[in-house]
Image (cartoon, rainbow, N blue to C red; front, side):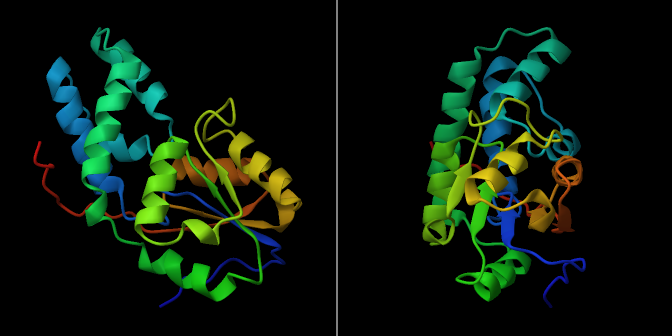
Amino acid sequence: MMITPPPGTYHAYLFDCDGTVVDSMPLHYVAWRHTLREWGCELPEDLFYAWGGRPVADIIASLNDQNGLTMPIAQVMRHREELFQQMLPRLQTVPETLEHIHDAHGRLPFAVVSGSTRESVTASLRTIGLLDKFDVLVCAGDYSRPKPDPDGFLLAAARLGVAPEHCLVFEDTEMGIQAATAAGMKSVRIPQRRTPTTPPTC
């Protein structure tokens, strides 16, 4: 059954990527867990989901601070991304979001607003065959303050040429919902999935 958006007049849809368009969060968690193990660091699953929407570099920096570690951010990012890329063939779409994409595509412009790298977002959307549905991609590095700050959503709205109050945001995380609200946008909360998965063979 399609999730009903809040009442309003919408001229654009803005989507988070991981966990909202692409059912990728379990795979990202596996990649995180196996990457961090090399440095004797753990990322509890509940914390991983609570931090959903934060850029990868920010997460590594926070883990360093919390654990008294000096993990090299660029190296950890690269290894984590390599493991995730190996698992791309397992990706699936999020059905609740896919219904809205099919229903509104061609009538409204779409943007993705993600804390993940452009490489990761592009690869994920290409894998599930939806990359060409989006007019704008706003990814880590495109804006200075991550969710729950509204910068990413406001940038996407500006690039689409749509006023924030006429944008509807689809998100699976609390920080994403907070960012949408701070941007003056209404939002749809997509249920989170925590499907058990296995690591890549490497």
